[in-house]
Amino acid sequence: MSITIRRFAVCLSVIFAFLVGYFLGVNLVFPGSVKKLFRDASDTSYFAAIISLGTLDRLEHGDAEGAKRLLAQNVSRYCRSDMPEVDPTRRSQLCRQAEEVSAHSPILKEQLAKAAP
Picture 1 (cartoon, one colour):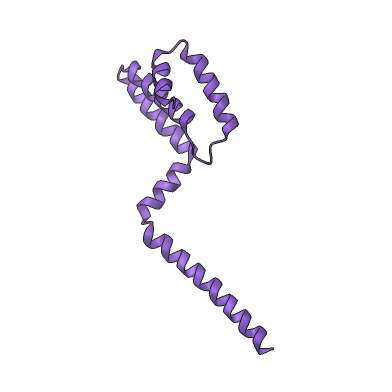
Picture 2 (cartoon, rainbow, N blue to C red; picture 1 turned 30 degrees about the vertical axis):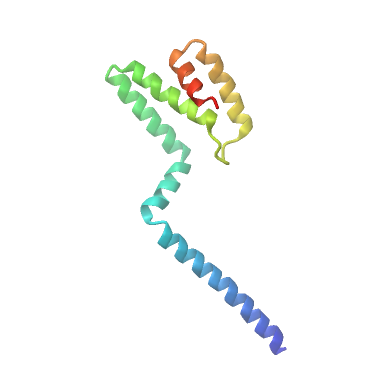
């Protein structure tokens, strides 16, 4: 009976040590600003709002070419993205649509050409 209790205590100690190490590692290795960056990067609504705000600001200042370039850069970045959370099917559909639009948009055509491997 004492061997079973001892094994159980060892297992609990290992699990507890792992959890404490993980908690300390995350809090010491990743300071608050880096954790916030990861959280913000995963917030797609935030990202869309930032791009929209930048585009709107450029349009309001009469910089239509700058607004087009900003949008084209983000489309091309998405097309060449290899991040694991990017769905390959959705990416290929968007890239096909971007190729179709690039027939009428020289800026998008330029940005997609930069994105090509």
